[in-house]
Image 1 (cartoon, rainbow, N blue to C red):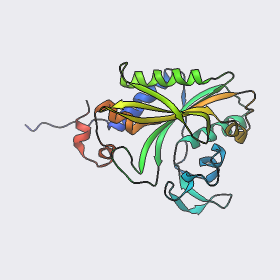
Image 2: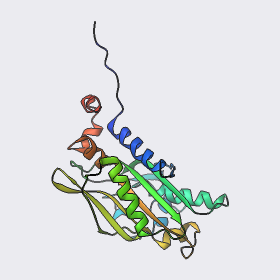
Image 3: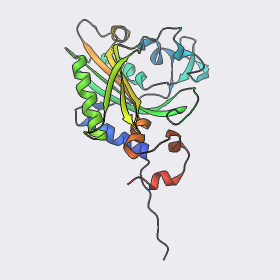
Length: 241
């Protein structure tokens, strides 16, 4: 009698589920937003200058349709657009901070692919806003998350980094196959981001982070090339227990 094979969850989906559960256990909510985005939510509200390199055709997929401001819409380059929409909707309903959220989803970058880069990949955006939120809170949250998802023995390195929507900013590297690999960027929310949605930065502070799901998956399951996730090769699925 022929043995029937059973399906298994894709390692990307499995990683997103595990990441989400870690943050749900910390009382984070989950938010979602559109793949096709306007320039305001993808760039302007996130304090990205008009001449920033990320707006160039080399990094962004522009679409032949314009938004209300007459600018071409884009395939979102990060799930940071969700934090802007979440804050706008919260204030429109009369809500106010504090809040904690994550936004998992697919993002798109117009760039060359290699073992750790793809034109499409998955990101989990995180945002915490309240009174007295500090860089120490961010550091604890990131270290807690990384050790939960990858184990207590993982080597972690935080170093200064620049992103227009945070100040100060940090980049987080993890040791993988004997080398440091960047897995996420983070920092304290820039006051201009709060102002763009109507939150007073003198009253509230917050931190944000963006986790590269594909790279966490690579470390968790020992996958050496992120491109394997998008080939449709069933051996990748059946190799994950």
